[in-house]
Length: 58
Image 1 (cartoon, rainbow, N blue to C red):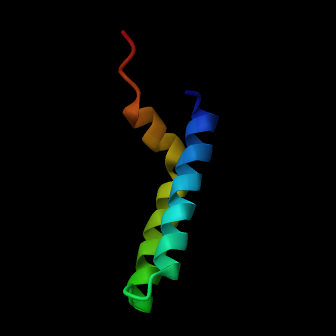
Image 2: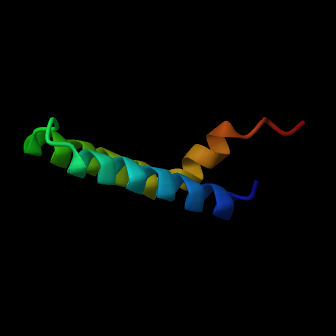
C-alpha cells in the first residue's frame, strides 16, 4: 500500500467515524467537537502514521 492510498483510506475512515458520531444522539455536542478536532489532527498527520507503521528497512 502506498502512502497516498493509506492517506485516502485513513481519511475515509476518519470521515466515517465523524459522520457516525454526528448521527448519534448519544454523543454530547461538546464531546463531538473535541473528538472531531482530534480526528482531524490525526488525518493531518496520516503520512507520519504511515511511516510509523512501516517495517524498519534493513
